[in-house]
Image (cartoon, rainbow over all chains, first blue to last red; front, top):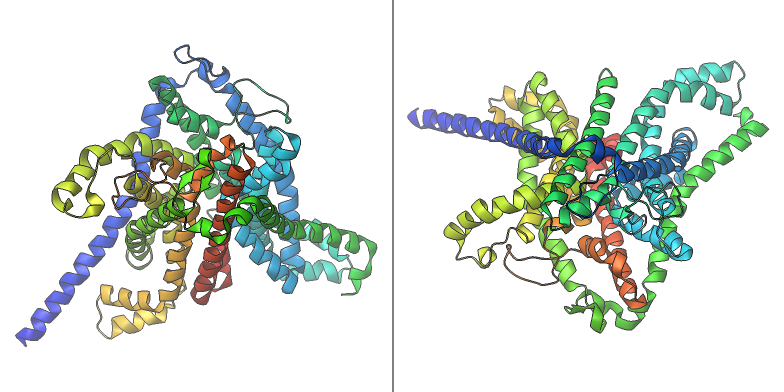
Length: 280
Length: 309
């Protein structure tokens, strides 16, 4: 009897210890997030000024800012979205509407593979097919690299969102004699649009944070550059250069630029989550 | 369907088909261009490139071993730290926490995945590296200093810092997949175990056992991410092509050597050596991700596997 009782106690203690340990893991991980974000806000806020947001980098000690990097990031993200969204959404529609065969399965698998490929590999690919023939780094090359990162992500989220559209809607429209492309374009796509849009926003947030594929495709520029055929600055590459430089002033600017970037990315993530919260 | 014969359908379907096929084309082009561009080193050094230890571009000595070593050790270190913590979080979220607590915690951990790699690198340089140099490193050396892995000079920059940063970065993805896998285990299993008098933890162990292959998939997926992570590692691992037993010594990974040197590589043979390493990284991540997908699918079904790969 006593042996059974101590066995029971031992099991209860193990239970208590293990459940506490898992809770500690969760608290630990959330603390890491809060510490990182808190540190970014604390370090970054003091360097943010109008000059910082609009000026170009100056020699160390003379102030300057990251206006050109903000414009460069925006321009490359825009180019990537202009290519990546239509192609990605069209590919997603194909997978959802016509992709229930071997070819669709192959594309689906290849898309997932491409999502898992490190982004620096995409950068090297663009280097060999765009930068080397053009003879120089450019915003075009950077934007194309980001577009390639976007396409499979957008395609897979689009497919998932279209799969959520009830089949009865398709059948209803088809029964009324609508051709398949009209059903897909005028009925299914609008129904899935809000989901596709949130997926697109997340993909845009994701590529705005990419650095590796821009290092040697877009390179960097110390000046405002509005031409896609010239090297282009970006927030992320600017942060990398500031952070790895030797000067305190540059480190402070790296934190401020990071605050801007992380603020933007977290803002989009939280908005998307807020908009889709009913669905999950 | 009879409608598919109309012109509009044909045009529409062709446009979609071309868009979908572009994904296939991109991956094929990546593979082709990389093989093509790494031909000079492939022909000159052959397969021995992979285990040659010397790396000295100015003397045209190219060996990938230090980078392969750095990639493998830093990734394993990351898994060693991240997997138990991720399992703990996932078990807490699925098996223990009330929905009200679980939801915001899950959301916050997902936000960790949204923070860009370069930001982790910045944080690593200015927060984590000093912390390891001043606090964690001395503690490890005082207590476990007899182990070769904890010997050597403490600079804060090196293999250990790289591994810890990687661990933080892969924790959200491993957690998310384990969570999905655990949620896919039918509730009847838990009810049966509890009804037989098992404690909550004993029940959890049974659930974990039944989800084992999916959890293995999550771990493999985490490995795939760790192997390919670039910016954060480049910023904290020290970028020195050496093979050292000490975790405090600087190291180099395949991804970080690419990030740090590609822009400066002007020689054809140097460029070719870097691209050959990129090719290795490409093939390794493709195999790892494919394997992860198969393992996760075996438990959680198609939908969940596709969500995270």
